[in-house]
Image (cartoon, rainbow, N blue to C red; front, side):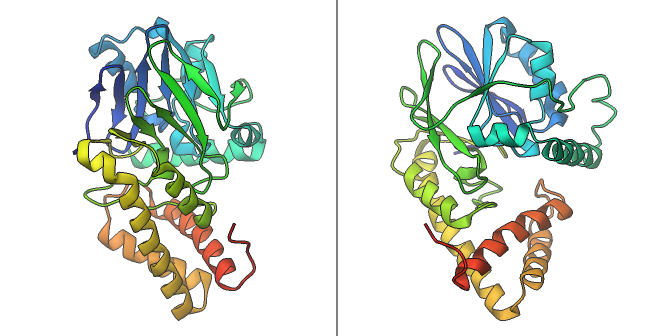
Length: 304
């Protein structure tokens, strides 16, 4: 079952934010942890939900970044300044991105653009949500874990959606947080998004498919429970395979990365007009994927 609104996922897990952008609060016996950072437009929603769900902010000691794309980082600077003792965790590759001035500029630009499209700029004017060099934290990677007392958050490195992507899994609850690296549950579909390296994206999905999952907690369009959660990663693997075949077909027919990207973008905008990414950003995403597909097709890229 797909659930697309904020609220309690199960004992110990809350979904916060809004339809286009979700973050999760884990309440362990000893402390609480936020997973992912959403878009900055959800800051008022999250603060309101802290109040309505009676969440004790003083117990929140950590925040885990699953990858360093702008739409998964938005609330972090604000929360870090609001809660100075908050420990921010991310992969080593993510911290390289988040200490790069050019990358920070892109993150802030894309965030501003998205907030304007969502009509959220005025509501955010009183919040200091811009990324600067004052947000620092701790590196975490493959095989490490965060112990919250009654639950353990295990880390897996799952590159492909981005080079810095990690996933989090709680074996006690069988909850998986794969961000966009696990596929995006848009409408009744699964959108595959192997932005940085589509081959690695598919390999990471195969690895995630070995996990026993009862709750698939996505960063866009809510979370998935029960039978659909158990089958979600397997279905994402099939969706990724079909989209790869489509990209390969369009590229072979057009013989041009730009023409193939334009065709795919126009098709997506026509059939998914309510998808959360604006056309310009979607074009950038498809360019990344198509460049990889073209390089593999022409033997210029190592598959593994």
